[in-house]
Structure formats: structure tokens, C-alpha cells
Image (cartoon, rainbow, N blue to C red; front, side, top):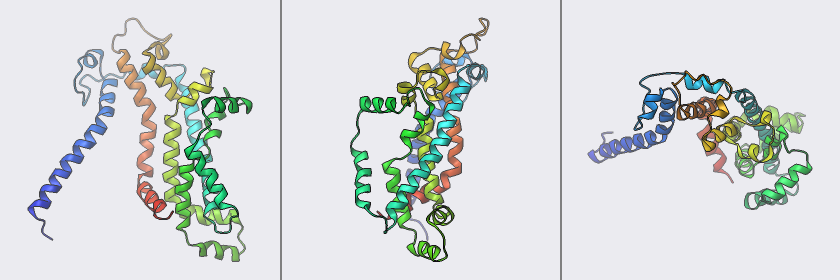
Length: 291
């Protein structure tokens, strides 16, 4: 079908507008990457930075020599992997139970779930609760309080409602138990929504730093995002270069080291996104069709 001049003009405008929007979204990351790879002279010039003219990796060397970075990375990986797997299991268990018509007291459990979306006990009651459970300065503080999220349960429940109930009934006739049905039939069919929720939860865990700031006292249990927050907010390069600075090295500044730290912190989660992107749209669409 031949397009009219109006349609062609709209398409051109749409491409230009979306291109500019994408550029404004990507530019902060491009700028940070460029500064992290630039020498002191280039970083001090200011202005727009789309690529480094004089490439140097000294800022990244400073970052990776930081004694707190390896353990902070391990703590972040631990909370992301364990927290994501645990949250998916608990969320899908709860959502599948709410989606089954034979589950008793569904309205009560749904009401309890929705209340958590509207009300919170506050920071002080939460702190006291975590203290009573022995979670202060405990690495499990990163995982246990975040095992279930009301929004994720609602989305997963909507998806499970779209799965024909006849599959469950036929499996029960063949002698399958509830766990066998759930893990062998329901979960393989739910890959789009589980991957979508995994992305949500993993990004949340990877970017979280406030709980580490509030409830962790030991440097051996902090996460990489808190280390990044300290560097940026306190403007203190010594946090990442203490004990290893060579007075003769002048190829890095606080800005280049901060930028390198940002790239090191966000790169792993950016690499993960393309692998789950194909499930994202499908999972959200199917999870929102039925309520």
C-alpha cells in the first residue's frame, strides 16, 4: 500500500523524535564511559563527551585495586542471585495459589497482599523488627525482607489465570501432585512472566544500597552500590585509592575514578538485559490481559 505524504512526514518526524529521545537517555551513560576512559586533561575540558580522545585505563586500575570492591561485588552478586531466585519462588507460589479456584480464603489473602501496597510500618518499626530477628549486620537482610512483592504477585497471578485450567485437571487425573504440576507444567509455560519478574527483581537488588547503609555496619558486608554512593556523595577518592596511590601518577582525577566506578557497577546488569528482553513485552502483555 502506497503511503501518503502525511504518513511519510509523520514517520520521519517519529524517527527523529524517538532518535533524539533515545540519545538523551543514552548520553549520560556515554558521557560517563567517555570520562572514565579519558586522561586528566580531557576530563577537565568539560563540554560534550561522546568518545575519549586520549584513552587510558588508569581509572579502572584504581577502581579494581580498591580492597573493598571484590567483597562488595560478591555481596551484590549474592543478594541479586539468591534474592531473585527466592523472590521468584515465593512470588509464583503465592500467585499460583491465588489463581487456583479451589484455594480457600483467597479474598483474605488478596486483601492482606494489597494492604502491603498501601501501608508501611515505617523505618523505626522495621529497624526494631529486623533487630529482633537478628538481621542487623547480617547479609540475609538483603534477601529475606524482599522475598515477596505485592505488584509482582498481582502480575504473576494475572498470567496464571490465562493458563487453561484443563491442564491442571488432566495432570491431576494422571496422578500428578501439586508440586509436580507446578514445576513441570505451569513454570515451563510461564517463562515469559518469570523472566520479566526476574528482570524486575534483579535490577532492584543490584541497584539497592539503602538497606546496606541502614542495617549493615561491617565493611565486609556492604554492597557495591553503597561503595559507589560513598564515592559520589562524599567526593572521597581515598575510599577507592587508599594505600595504592603513586604520587607520580597524574592520569586520573576524582571525576574519572567516579565515572569508572559507575561503569563497573552498572555494566553487569546492562549485559543481562538483552538476554531477557525478548520475554519482557510478552510477559507484561500476557500478565496484564486478565485481572
